[in-house]
Amino acid sequence: MTTIIFVYGISALSIVLGFIALLTQKIYIDPTTKEPTVEVEIKFLGKLKTNIAALAFLFLGIALAVFAFGKSYPVKKVEWTLIGQLTNEGNQTINWEEGTLAVLPKPFTFELTEQGSFSITLDIEEGKTIEDAIQMIDYSHPVGRICIRLKKEYEEYSNGRESLIQDATENVRRFRPVPIQYIPSQTGGSQ
Image 1 (cartoon, rainbow, N blue to C red):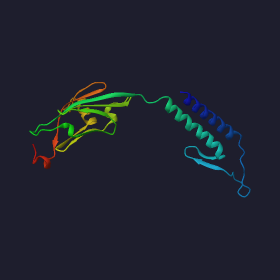
Image 2 (tube, helix red, strand yellow; image 1 turned 90 degrees about the vertical axis):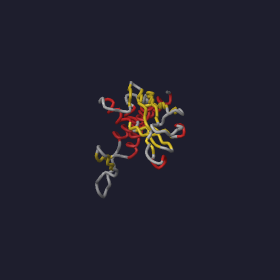
Image 3 (tube, rainbow, N blue to C red; image 1 turned 180 degrees about the horizontal axis):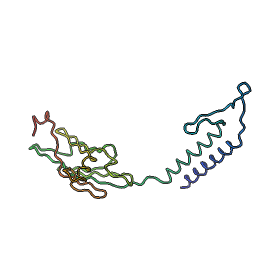
């Protein structure tokens, strides 16, 4: 916390010094063109006739203040959990632990049992839902694949239509059993 206060102090000092430099500056006129020698164009502000040092102090102070503010009030995270069961509707035995489970695009922790039960846990910014934070859950296995598009499934669930989501609470989404889609070349045909 002391470091943040120090950064706030430096940023305030830089902003004050920048404004003082801007207010007390002398504009030097080019004798041949009779124009100010330093002219800076800044988007949204237009052309400024000033010296670079004054602007550097001002922008450095603003940048430091924004940085310190971001560090002072970090975004709170809320833990979300996705729970479900991968199923095999064919007669083939599948060791679910041999596959790869991924949640895109967020980092996550997960448990996947040999029977196909899974639990995915991830932290998401407070005020957002899990559907805002991740695009899909993807499970890949040598014999097939499962892809759950979370936002689409939640919209279907919310509208009372058929969905892979069985139950939704504040921070948990529970899925119905999700069947694997076989890769025909691996199974010798569809199951």
